[in-house]
Amino acid sequence: MSENRFYAFRLQRRMALGTLVLSAAALGGCAVIGGNAPAITQYQLPPKPAPVYKSHTQLLCPSLRVAEPIADRGYGGTSIHYSNAPYVVESYAYHQWATAPASMLQPILIETLSDAGLFRTVLGPDAPATSSLQLNTRLIELDQHIEGKRSEIHLVIRNSLSNMIQQRQIAAQRFSVIVPSQPDPASGVIATETAVGKWSLQLTRWLRHEMRASGLCKTKAP
Image (tube, rainbow, N blue to C red; front, side, top):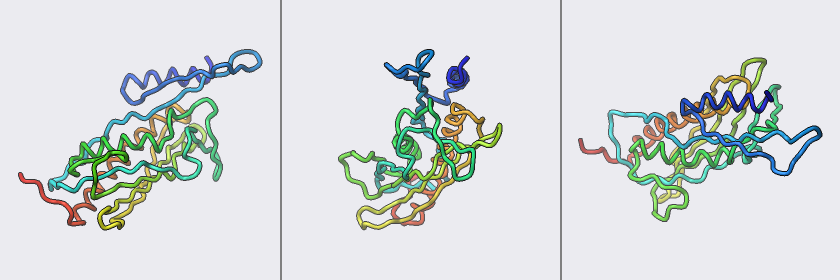
């Protein structure tokens, strides 16, 4: 069994638990000496919300627009990055994201914040309606750090909240999440989903705290 088929087999077992959406795309027309080139396995993070943070104080805040997330240099493509030495980052040859990770964060943000019920409405970047607030997201790091038979997913994201009417930033926060995984790309993807879930939960708590302090929200009637 080839390395790629072994990882795909392990991933299929995990899919039964609903932890991952997977698609495989073969390299059409490419060949290597002795046979066809290995297939490229593509992974996608499902846009399902993390468990919503509940608060005793029920706030109703102005509408929020989720700006299109951006990524720092090196993280804007579909490569799945790993590191097995300090200051060295490489990419898996036959394992990729289906789309850029920053792009996959957008539907997760919209679904999570909509379910949280904190804002009057949660809009995407292209929605024609107006909003008083905007959430900005920047992906700083998403790597699988490998050391022997152990590895960790490192996810670092910076979020900022802006008042679009007053054209000023309300608050900003840098989130750093580390999740252990097995040292293979399929396990790293599953750990990445866990890391994104933890980040979105931390983000919801942070937004609730900042909005309560801003004085822009009303208390919902019981």
